[in-house]
Length: 503
Picture (cartoon, rainbow, N blue to C red):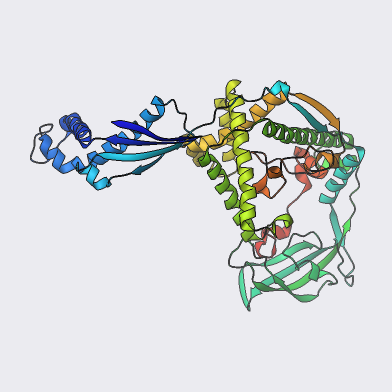
């Protein structure tokens, strides 16, 4: 076996590898001798099949396996002999025809290209200075959360028979949907409650109920959204024949101890405390997210080294695939609409480079600090993933148990967050008091450290951090996380009628 390096430019290395046909033939003979005692063929006693006959019967397939194994062995030897740490799998190109090599008519000659991992010294985390925005929970936030909870518990009472429905009223209806005069599956409902202005039904449905009275019959003309979940309805014009059975007005919910008890709390004060704890937890999480973003910016500034081309290509392709999907769905940032595809690709490739660089930096720091992901941490992640698929928990868990690559995808974000926490513990972190709006504002808000051009805020695919930051949540949603608040959003009758509902 002969290994010759043909290229060593930066992180790009190439080798020409030659394995003589004679050596392959010797390996084949050795393989035949190894399996001969176990071979059993008709007309021969077990273990007594002549080697020549085995070669005639199975030589071609056995040689194919030998060639594949030899290529793997040769590539490993080239990497080990040259002390190379590959950045991904090497790429091979056979110079001779595979059939000739397998038939023993030609040497095995192939070209191997591999990108290697860069060597660099990561910054000392203790030398980093990070500002972490923090916000206190205000009385206004608590008040707004209580108000939102009260709205979710809103009840309705009948208006007079002649009263017209207005925005915010609940209308009890029966409806039958049709397209081109033909009723469609899921387009019929009885005693469906529609709250006008709630935005629970497809565009145009609720709005056309303004002004109806009990006993009215009306045909609503709507168009299903192009992205509607039921593909047979998406983008189509439809009519809904509606019969109004009742018009109800909202009844304000009094926020008191009785209200809190309906939500499972002992008192209004206990409910307030639950809301405060939830909001504090939410603010703390967002503060950490903002500190992480600034930390990643600081790490990006501190490091500049060559990147493996294959890793950048893979990251860019993943980003660009999402960009193309967004374009197809009509979800394009205003700032991107007038840019050429070439300009966008240049911008997104810069972002891919940033992501790869940060990933390598975090990996190196984590390795130096001997940070790992414990088996129980991975098990919790697998369990959390399995819980997303009710009824299929066992199958999902087994999938991850048998699939190392899938496990790696779960392990990566856990590792990243542990490394980020490690760095934040060592870095000089200064807490800066901000308002809630400032805490949840974009990274480019006043007072926020500017990112490099490649890290400007874009669509989800353009997030600069390796992992997308948590989205901003409203105060009421924080309280809804508490067990007591689970009762705050009872199912509506119309929720079972999918065709007219938003998807």
